[in-house]
Picture 1: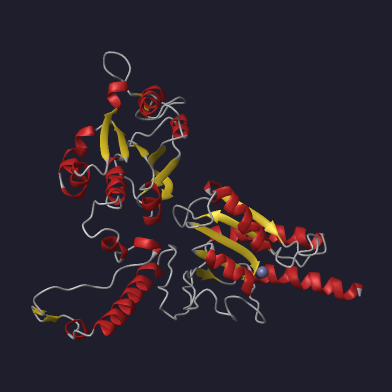
Picture 2 (picture 1 turned 120 degrees about the vertical axis):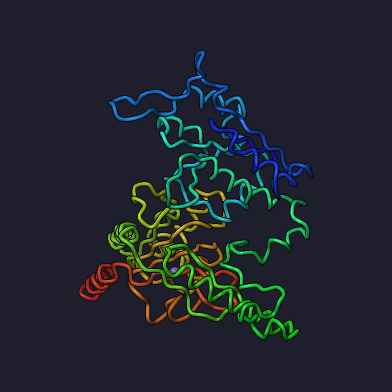
Length: 404
Ligand SMILES: [Zn+2]
């Protein structure tokens, strides 16, 4: 794997590249890391890389020409072969799944932003924009280093013990946090290691670790909107996430889809699938909509043409991948068992619905989202704009009865 990091402060990477796992990965030949000094592409005798903003304002902005020259020197066929990652506080939040996806690429270029800001047109260079957290840094160097660390350790042969070494770690494989761990001594300053770990009973230890990891993850994610999947062995209720104004915005869009279905004489359900927002208060306009659809069972003469199924198919096409990690699905009525199963298979992490279905709800009656036999357990947000979603259904059935 080839990694290029474009920065105007290349000195910041000296320690990072000479220590730890990254140095080991380079030494072992698992990857090649190249730091590119943006100033080498600056203009004039002073290698100028920034300029005053049009329209006035304090400070300077990083200019287009040096960035385009630098990135194009590394990845001449832009986008076709290399992934070009821009560090940006407004980007999508970088997750373990992103590290796993980037670790499969042959060439990744990181563009380190700077506190002064970019000329907006520089964003056109990037194939991806990521943020490492909801805070502001003076430059993207530390964010890029954090992402490179998480990618490089996934490369084959870098960690001793192969894939197993990473399998149980916190956040690996889309899961939650690890169970607490202890080493010698058994009691330190009055703090004792849990008895079960000293018991030598491996079945009991596994069970304890699973439950402890589960509890810790639940506590961790309770205050965040981050998706959380229970481990397959845990027969727990699905994690409930609180709705935000963001969720209402997309449920409203799903409602408009439901109204379209009603106009065609279909049972009015609508569905929207979006990319997970970079933060809970991200403006809805910044979110990519992957798919929207409404029920077409009658029109298509297809019992499986539910809003969710049609939206899932469209989202698979949009992503070019059936794994819809990092997305949210909105549907006006609780998914039926078929749709709930399909949603879980597609690995959608968060599902929001409006009206509950007390007769055949895939979540509340059939328990598909938390069934221990399912490999994936989406978090759920039931009852988003429930009154409106229920109203559309009631109105439809009331009219149908009055016609009959
Ligand atoms: Zn359905």
